[in-house]
Length: 151
Image (cartoon, rainbow, N blue to C red; front, side):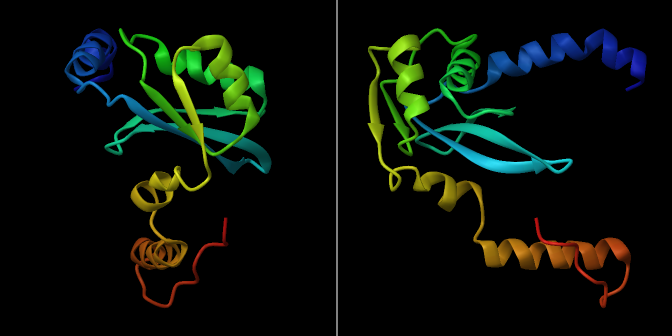
């Protein structure tokens, strides 16, 4: 498809894809991760349902109640229903935002209940490093390639 075709049909195609997306579950897990972008520390906010389906991600420069409210509003935009339960890692910003945006939703906090992110979404650190080294060797075309620096 050409650039003109993408600009002409892209919005309609995205709209149809969103319509076909399965309805997320009623238990949502929320978590944030520190990431560096061009040497600056940012926060990657993530939300998945109980099946591990990613609902939304958002990169922000802050990790306060206003940032959590922004993430909740973005997460609920376009949905006709709210979750039955939110599970977070105990960051107080989530509680402040939840009390304002969706006060009727039950909020559970536990750093162990958000293990869904560690187990399903990301491989173990050791496997991640091995995969990076292997990918680097394949990209560079020879086996003795030096791996990229750690993140």
